[in-house]
Each structure stands twice: as structure tokens, then as C-alpha cells.
Image 1 (cartoon, one colour):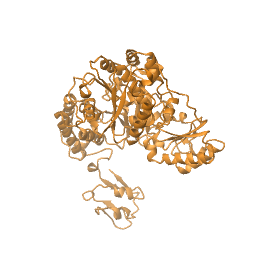
Image 2 (cartoon, rainbow, N blue to C red):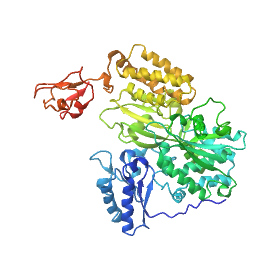
Image 3 (cartoon, rainbow, N blue to C red):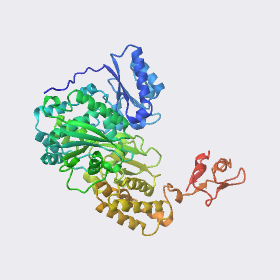
Image 4 (cartoon, one colour):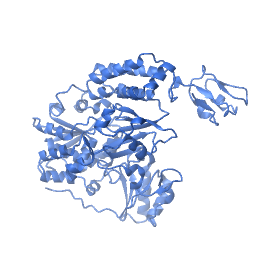
Length: 604
């Protein structure tokens, strides 16, 4: 057995610059270049090293720079800030106090990234190397421990022992369904066939979700190692990573990781001299949400239109080209090396009864801190939103969360003490899903919120089965009509009947969960639907057709700015007296509210 060399020396002082997609879009590569030029100019290349890493997690404060052995954290770095940090790095290496993280203006600064409240409740297994290593360097991955678990398994464990370890760990699929990973592997290994496939599902299509993208960008070798371990366990010799083409940076780094691993004998024939062979290819998807479903993914990899098929047979029996195929998503596979290296008991000790380990979430919406979060299963929604997310980013309280992606469930603030695990969320009508979590405040209309997600799932329906194709279309028509002020008595009951029909009769899981945003908002925010229908009122003033604009007499100065900017001449007055808005002429564009210098116009 040839074990990988993990002795690559590291520079004494490191400057880690986030080079994930979000920070790259904000100029982080130029910041890294500024550091590199200064270090080279001063002859310090041997003692100070700039590392372009994957996502650090706190996307709301990017571009992110973490400096030195102490992990000094600089958020929202621009080129001017980079120059000031360079002086510190090249000089006495004391933190640049004005640039350090602060929770709010005037608050005490926090120097170390590990001490930022956003990180306090996190426990990183999947994201253990993201923001730490250079994802385009195999030596950097080696130094962080990648491929040690594969070397150990090939040298000391049988495939059955690997499956037993994963099963005993309690790991469940992180792609949404939550099926036992060890059980799936066991079924695939037991399936008859001289050729088997192990595939990675990286077709992440949820609005606002970027967990898989960040892992592939930040630590692609962890995913490849997990794939090799899974292939060894089930007896697969070929595999694919099915990744959406909208992730160009992830695809680029993944291609390089595969080539580097093949060159070092970590993929391909006779891996590490063990006699086990496994090759990996990339298939880029065209962005169809339905291809996240296993059988639709299989059809797409085979070159056919991505549409689900009835099950059974399940992919573990008849998948790619009718061969036994095991499909796991990115996050599931990234857990595997840690489990093999640390043991099933260590992983099972994290989380709750039937929900072991950690889960990665993309935390977005009306919270102070948005970004990538990895927490132990069992944390409450309240802890996620208020402790990690920092609570509302406005003066309005958080009203609800949408958890589990576009086909997840909307939960009200009264249920924020619900634990984030498979069973607890299912009991209140939500799902863990792939890991999207959107928090919204009282400015959000829950009817419009449900309409947005339903519009997404309806648009992404493959159209193969009638319940999903027609049912979601009719539901969307009704919800849209309600938000436009044309709701009718009986609409709520019709939505419930259609939603339950779509849920119970659709061909695949994506269709079966498409109605969840409507059904859960009807359950927990029914009064908003009733107000829209019976009173033609939107309490959040978010539905334009149900809102009008009015002038606040005490604030209006008669300056005429609103009248000058109104595109339909709906505002009239005598000069220097209070202005009025004609509701019949007003097209509710909101320009007057935006332009008024005295905040004298409100939506009612």
C-alpha cells in the first residue's frame, strides 16, 4: 500500500483569502494578488504564504481574509483595507483594530474568526477544510488529512466493514430524502451485476442554496475521497459527478482535483497499489431542478431528457444503463472520510436520536448574518435564526422561516423552538431537505411567499405526470389570483384539496412536495389568505394590487418632488400645501414613496 505524502511543509504565517464564488465576485482575487505582490516585493515568500481558499461561511461579510496563526478575521475587505492589512503582516503583525469584525457600529471588536458569534454554535465536519486549504492544491489537501481515510480503508478494512461503519454512524442522505446511507450501500453491494456505478449528485437547484457548490469549490478532494470509499464499499468501478453547469468555478476545481488525484494514483486503476480501481467523470447538467431526483439524473447522464420514472426498480438494482447504481449527494459523501477516520461512534455521538451528525444550511433572508452554516442536528430554529443568524436585520421581528428548499415548509415564529432534525420537522409539516433556510420578517406576505416558491416548482415540473403538471398549475393560478385581489370564497378549500392530491399522487418526490409551501402557509398563516380574499387586504403591504399609497399630512411639506416624479400624474395639490394621491389613477409603482425626502408617503 502506498500512502499519500502528508508532510508538505507549511509557511509559518498564512494569509487566507476567500476565493469562493461570492467573494470572487466581490474582488477577492485582486485582494489576494495585492498580498502576493507585496510579499514577493519584500522577499517574504518563504515565510508568509497567501492561500486562496474556498468559502469561509460568513458570506454576508465578504470578501473575507483570515490572517496568521491566530486566525485574525477581517470582513468586507477591499483593496484599501488590504493595503492596511499588508502593513500589519509585514510589520509588527498586530491586528488592524479598525478593520476587525464588529457585531454593530460601536460594539467591541472581535479579532479571531473562531470567536465570531456566527461560528459559536457550529461544528464543522463537511466544511472542515473549507476556508482553510487551497482547493486547487492536492498537497494542501494532503496536509489537511484528505485521503488518509481512503488509505486506511483500503489497507485494513473490507468493503463490508466500511458499510457497517457507515450504517452504525447513523448517517442519512443529506440530499433531502434522509434515507440511511449505510442501508443504500448495502443494497447496492448485494445487487447482482459485474459492473456497478457510484454517482455524486451535485445538481443543487434550490433557490438560495449553495451548500454543495461551496464544498466542491472549497474541498473537492473530500468529495472524491468519499466517492472512492463508497465505490470500494459497494463494488463500483465507474462513477460520475453530475453537477450543474451554472457552477463554473466548482466544475473547474473539480476537474483539476480529478486530474491531480489520477496523477497521484488516488483515482483510476489500482488505487494506492490496493488492486481496487475506480474512475470518475463529470457530467454537466443544464439546470433542470427535477434532475436532482435520482431517476431523472440517471436519464440525463445517459443522454436522455431528465424525467423521473416509476420506482421500483430502484437505482441500486437498476440504474445507469440498467446496472446497479448508488447515488449520494455532495454533503453525504463529504461526511464519509471523517466517519472512516474517526469511527462510527464519534459521528453517532453528534446530533439526536434518528438524526445523527451535522447538517449544512444556507442561511439567508432577513437576518444579520447570512452564509454557510454547519451545525449539529438537534439545534432549534430559534438558535439558528437568532444566535447564529444574529436575529432580524431590520427593526421588524422575524415572522417565519422557509426550511427545506422550495418544496419545504414555512414555519411561524411560534414554532421556532422546534428542533432541526428529520422527525421534529416532519411533525410540523416541514423537512430538513437539502439545507436551505430562509428567514423572513413582518414585511413579507406569506401568500406571496408561497406563490413565489410554487411558481418555481411549477416552472421546473418536468410535466411527465398529470398531478404535478396540471395540479401545480391550477394551484399557482389560484394563489396568483388571490395576491392580485381577485380571490373568491372557496379558494382556500380548493387549494387544500389540490395540494393534498398533488402530494399523494405525483410520480416523484419533487412533485410530491411541491405543494408544501402553500399547505404549510395555509396551516400556519391562514388568516392572511382570508384577509386577501374577504377584505382585499395584504397586512404586509407586499401585494401591489391590494395596496394603495397615501400622504401623511403631518410630514408633507408640499415640496412637489412626488408630483414631479409620478409617471401617471396621480398626485395633485396646491403648491406648498399637502399633496394627495388619486387611488384610481395610481399604478402603485412606488416611485413617490422612494423619492419623497420627508418619508411622508406610505403604502397602506
